[in-house]
Image (cartoon, rainbow, N blue to C red; front, side):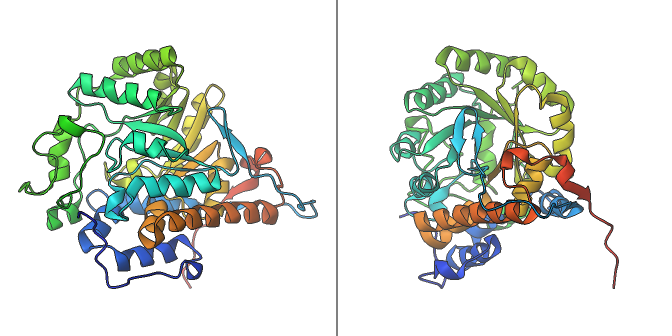
Amino acid sequence: MGFARVGTVDSIDLDQCVTCRDFQEAARQRLSAAAYDYYVSGALTEWTLRENERAFHRWRFHKRVLVDVSTIDASTTVLGTTVPFPVLVAPTAFHRLADPDGEVATARGARSVGTVMVASTLATASLEDIASTGVERWFQLYVQNDRGLTRSFVERAVAAGYRAIVLTVDTPYIGIRYPELRNRFQLPEGMELANFGEALVSGTGGAGDESASGLRAFSEQFDQTLDWGDLEWLCSQGESAGVPVVAKGILTGTDARRAVEAGVAAVVVSNHGGRQLDGDPATLEALPEVVDEVGGDIEVLLDGGVRTGPDVIKAVALGARAVLVGRPVLWGLAAGGEAGVERVLSLLRDEVIDGLRQVGVPRLADVGPGLLRPALPAVDD
């Protein structure tokens, strides 16, 4: 009960899905309209959502030739963990909308390619069940009005071997998304926010909630007083536990510097996938300012709009240590469960490797801003 795959296609030939767009179309065919709209939508007019992808087209490669590219090293490290290519799984909610095994299937797919999964507070599998897969893992945190509950999330994550706490700093309240309002989006009956247990209260968006968007109602429980002092407190707790803290949702150099002063080990340049403030800049556009301000002090990561291996390389060239992908992973999960997640991540890995070979830079560590030039303005035919 609670599984939302109600489309007309019973099975997908994953071998025929060779791009993230292919997986998106496969997911559209398999998901209920409400589930698909929930995953795909952005805030208001979705200008920022579109900008996240368009920004990658504003850069072109300045490649090198006659370079020995017989061996390619696409590996990097994130907070001390080596990953074979610079793509992590971003935190996204409600994976059981896409597959009965939900986040557990996602974790297994990420584990199979050796990358890190960032598990969401709003997961439909518990952080302990996700940890049981053995995936390299970080835990994304929404601070609740109930600070005791928030503290318990952190303690459970540390006990379950999560290697970082990723604090989302750009969501005092869940943004307005028109498709969710039209669909009166709710979690299907029998689907729960698994990390909350008995702490779950009315207004969470479960079955029977008659509000226009149960998810927005649930965000009444997010602590809207959250400030830099709270980030400092969380960093002190992380330091005591030996677990670094990452601030996700940074878009300016000023805020990046304040995050460093608060004690973070990394920031994620993110606009929440274009789902919060319509009018936020594309994350790739914001990246250079953040890197210029704090790139010499901490690791800088990026999410938003990454759909191909060349996108990944462009982000790294502009200073990102790695990128996080959310929607493409969900498309893979909806299309083929664990195997679909593995295939999406493998396709991105292979495209990164091929991209490094084609631009004449055999080591990811040698990718830098000299590899890019601003794209020429488009000319109408």
